[in-house]
Image (tube, rainbow, N blue to C red; front, side):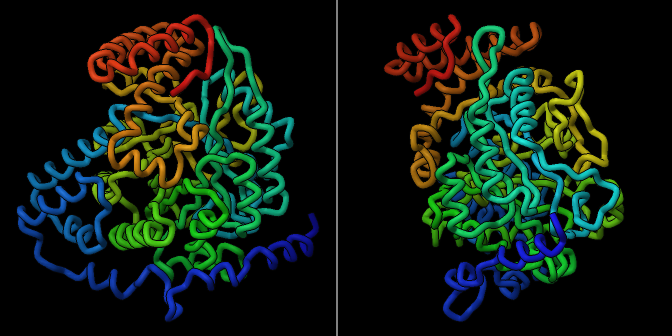
Length: 499
């Protein structure tokens, strides 16, 4: 496209009235820098009794206030931290049981009009190969993901550019959902496509809602507005801080009731980011009646020709990253926590017991990389946004999870049955959703084992399924006969049976 046409498109992206309607009566935002600064002032660590009061509130599956979160952030006693980690694990098990949801990222475009200084895909980076996948290429990618790797759930990632605008996203969703691939015993298909894209207008978001997208993800990157301004040039769309922090309000008003938030850790002080993110959570609860469906925790990673990421001032250590995940599980006990393949296998193992509910595997973030010749993963740096830390296959990761007692869930039934938004949140808070999800996890795990697993993974996975079936028979005797009937039909080759 010509530069003038792109500039015109950029100039029309932001609707000021779709910012102003969400501001406080005094014109302020929900992220109050002065209040956060006050909470971050040096104060004595809280007494153990006070810490346990806050933990009890978290374990009742109620979001913490910013001040309560700030108190937990000041805990220094190592034994208290171990208690906090244990409570985080119990909360995860109470809400999500021993399930771990898996997905794959699918990058559809590397063209972007923004110029974020930390991003390998920034507009000024001439070292990156630019592409926007055609619908035929998208079909090829999905066939590889659903037919060779066995994924049922994707997060589809789009650059902000007129060639990958709302019409393109809508068409790509339709293409993705239409793919159905024969497998060893049944068929593979994508049953839930989440979207990670730029903030949009309400009318555009309504289009995506009608297309059946899953969760709509927009990461704030940083809530520190001064640092945000330094990192995102003012002449770009992303340079408008308020357009981004109210994107979830617009999504809810468009009917999209599952939203995913996140911070790119390493852009500013993580203590500030965590408290600001909690302000966002509480604002969503106030305005939308529900908090975020998921929280994600990307850390800055190396990217081709991107000097900013080489020695960032606010780099987050592994120990601090563990604290961030634990504090997030305690602060927003009902939400899903996503740790991606940015992290190393060792770090993902470390975080799994602390409240994580979703991880990707067999991931490739090169545009068009899954369908590369010979099926080899293409991790060339000039084709992707950043470098991955965990290149392991889905089969290998699932085997490791099963050995740790975690059942991999490919379930998407709740979304297709209308268990979304406030409905799913209410079910998660009470533990009721886990009863559905455990049954569906068993069924979808059996599908995957029969269709895709190596002999080693199949053996470990089947042993875990046998244990799970025995537990359901004991704990949910009313549901067990129907589960066993569905299970036997899936073992015979049927697919996509669910509660």
